Amino acid sequence: MVIRQLFLAALLALSVSSPSFAIGKIETSVDRNPAVEGEYLVMTVNADDDVSTGKLDTSALLRDFIVGRTSVSRSTQIINFDAQKLTRWQILLAPKHAGNIQIPALTIDGVSSEPIDLTVMPAGSQTEQMKNLFIRTSLSTEEAYVGQLITYKVKLFLAVDLQRGVLSAPAIDGAQIKQLGDDLDTTEIVNGRRYRVIERTYGIIADQVGELTIEGANFSGDVLVQASRRGGMFSFNESKPMQAKAGKSVILINPVPNEFHGEWLVSDLVALNEQWTQEDSYPLGSPITRTITLLAANTDETSLPDLDIKLPPELKVYPEKGQRKSFVRDKQIVSQLTQTLAIVPTKVGSYTLPEITIPWWNPHTKQQEVAKLPARTIQVTASENADKELTGIPLETNQPTTSGIWPWMTLVFALLWLGTLIMWRRALSQNKAMSHTGSEQTRSTARQASTAYERLVASCEERNAGKVLSALQSYFNEKYGRAMTLSDISQLSSALNTGVSALQACAFGRQQTELDFTVILDAVKSVPSQSAEETSSALAELNPR
Image 1 (cartoon, rainbow, N blue to C red):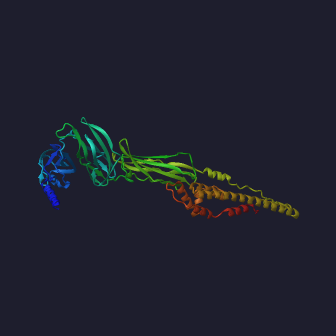
Image 2: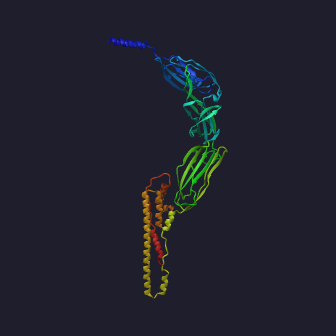
Image 3: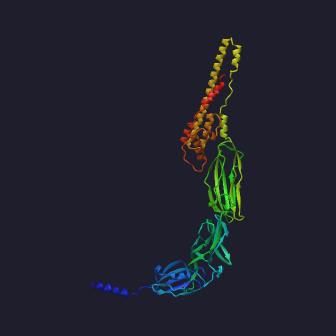
């Protein structure tokens, strides 16, 4: 027990007598002196201990400097079992004004650094070829209209190796901004010195009239610079924070001119193009694919107006969703709107596709211009299927009748009752034969209609809208004994009108919709038959009058 107490007392005495680690000194330095007004320099603060980051108070610097990003690092060096710890702060400072400025002393745990007398030269005193990093910007115009695309190009010039960094977009109020395309990484020689250049392009669209102020883009990052060890003959690369900011720009934004008529579109150049198969005639019911492209130079894709395409009612149109995109061509931003249409003619004839016009404003000539697609005329002819069905329909033939012989026979053989009876029986047998022939034709037409209906049912079971449309025409061609267009079929009943429209949308529309084909068959079955009326009418012509 006594030995244990003596051991604890010895440990306590040793801990009291051993020296405790504390800050011995604080050193501050800057990477350049003199400095330039408004340009960042790096102030380094070294404390010879492991110090908490929050213990360094830099608020005293705010009076004469803009305080930028601060980075902190810690290191430990052991020499002859003696551990030496170091905490380093690197602070970006930009002098607010020219003249002689003193960087005040900084204090941590009662230990203070020495103040630094800094000479600050007016802005622009340092030439660009003496700088290791700087930013240049350019605008496509100094005056624009509401909704006009303004390109803002930023070039970051680097004469040192970039370790990491962030190039931030300019700050703007009252406008939309987005990056256009990818960054370009090139090299340029400025006043005999080679720089690595990172170029980025932004698109700006003003929403308000008046002066538009653009706060310049800025860069913040770390670069690698050569540094030599104290007392050594070798150099090494160390990371150094750097920051740069572009100047402020102002653009005058004009309102939409009073003399402009139409949906507002401002661009350097607008053009309309179309692609489709030019033919002498188009078959009835077959879709015609027409692709219309709207191109605009130096315009954002969201500013392109929707295409208003009007067609005659006999031409049903099924438009796809418009595709918008932007790309760079000859160092200009080009926006494109592509609209594809499926046009289905429902009646035979000649039709005119109206002219398409897009009004736009030229900011260079300050005049309204119009991009046009001329009117087109197309011929729609009966389809081959309809022609085949038409040739397969049995035609009515003039049957020999004896209706004109009876008066004469009556006059000539009035007294010959026996001859009259023989002639009457002969005419009766002839009518029976004709009735038998007509019934055979009716049964043949019924068999053909039955076959066409079976094809229609098979197409519905396949759930193929295109085949169903073709089978519908074949069925009604045979049912009514004449060529029936889809428009004619739609007029038979409201149910068929709805069904044919749904089939065309399913067959030619971009959006594939679910369709209940049993409803189509029910609509076909509900159509009243005209065969009885046609039979009555045909027999009436055979009756003698």
